[in-house]
Every structure is written in structure tokens, then in C-alpha cells.
Length: 301
Ligand SMILES: [Zn+2]
View 1: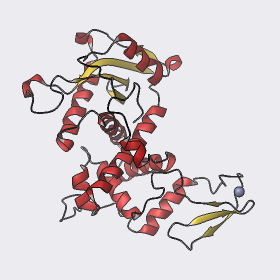
View 2 (view 1 turned 90 degrees about the vertical axis):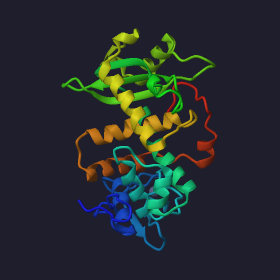
View 3 (view 1 turned 30 degrees about the horizontal axis):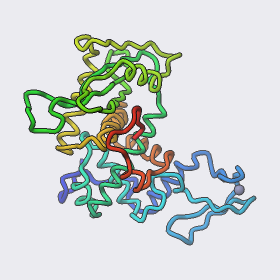
């Protein structure tokens, strides 16, 4: 595959090589089965191309609908090409830091940071909507805290998490959720009511058989391995993460893992991520930075 000599990263998919191509792809995702007026439900419209973002004027009520309303791209001032490139880089096995992204797509660090958090928000909201169902395993575990690494990284003793997953026929974790438990002073274990709350909120109980060993030595090991992999992956890209946004980064890890593990081609992964970005409204900057450092459990970051 061709690699961009300047960045060492793969160039953006050839299908999305212009603003027009990106916009047409988003319009097709917004109205898969053709235009539907968001105000009156009518399906005939006139396309107005006089602005950067085309508008679709309803043939009955005259409402002018933008394809980007209620999506991650709403009110963006950036070229869609930069967004598409960012989404593609986000899907790299270990993601991309805001610093690196800012260099590659040539935006400020703050813009890159906010873009990545918007993508994490999308994955978090998507995760919250998809309950675990079927053969479900749940562990009380810890994120981070490998004692052999002393205090070189944050969370030397690990942070309490509840992890849950569905299991493939081959016995591997499929859809995974890793949720931080609100940390009261000095408490680093998961209490039984927190485990029960996770199961009640994250598992589709009527359609599931839930196995949740409460003893540490009986943990479902393949799921523990995923929690370790999340730690290794996030640490390799972000080095040090404070607790304030950690849940969002965990959502990033599990969301990307889900998009990548389906065995789909890069092109398809990007399309799946784009579909989520078109289906879930963006988080605003004030709302993002107002997030509490110890979010109440459970969280949809
Ligand atoms: Zn209408």
C-alpha cells in the first residue's frame, strides 16, 4: 500500500479525494433511502448548491435541511477532507495523539484534541446504545497498575473497572465494554452493587446468560486480557492519561476494537465509523470540558 512519505501514515482512501466526494458520501449516508423532510416527512425536495454545504428544500413545507445537522460535522469550519483523514487515522491500531494529528492534518493542537474527543463521544454514545446480549461474561477488574512498572505511569495500583463482553463461538471476547468505577478516596475495588448496576444497565438481561465471577482468581481470562491490551494500547499512544477523560479513551479503545475486529477492510471500517458520526450529534466544547473528573457511574462519555 502506498504510504505518505512525509508522515509515514497511509493517505486517505482514494474514494474520498475531494470535498465534493466527502460531502456526497455524507449525504448518501444521511438519507440512505432518499430525502425525508425532518419537519413534515415529505420525500420530494430541491437541492440548493449555492453554499459550501448544500441544502435540501422540502417540496411541501419549504424547510431547508442540511445533511450535517445532528452529526459530528455540524457547524464545523474545517474541510471535510481533514475530518475524513482524522477519522482514518483514529482507526489505526493504537489511534493517534492530538499532537500527531495536528501535525499530520495541519490544524492547531486544540482543534485536533477536540476532533478526537468528538469521535470518542460518538463511540461512547454508540456503545451506550448497544447492550451486551447472549453469552455474556462480566469481570470486576483493574485498569493499569502493573506492579513491575512501579510509578513510571499513572494509576500505579490500577483503577477499578467493570468489564463485560459477549463471546464468539470460538470463545473469544466480541463486543467489549470497560467502565471505570467512580473512585472514592482510597477505594480501589468494585462493590457488588456496582457490578449489579453494570449488568442491569449494560446487558440485555432477557436475552442473555450472564456469568460474573466475583472472586478475582475466577475472572474470565480472555476479557482480562482485553483490559490489559487496552492499557498497553492507550499507554503507547497517550503515555499518561488522567482520570477526567479516561472513560472516553476506554470507549475509544473498545469502539475501535469493535470496528477493527469485524475483519472488514479499512474502507469498510471508515464507512462504519462515518455512519456513527452521521447518526450521533456532536458534543459541544463547553459540555466536554465541564465533564466531572469523577463521573457518576455508569457513564456514556
Ligand atoms: Zn417538509
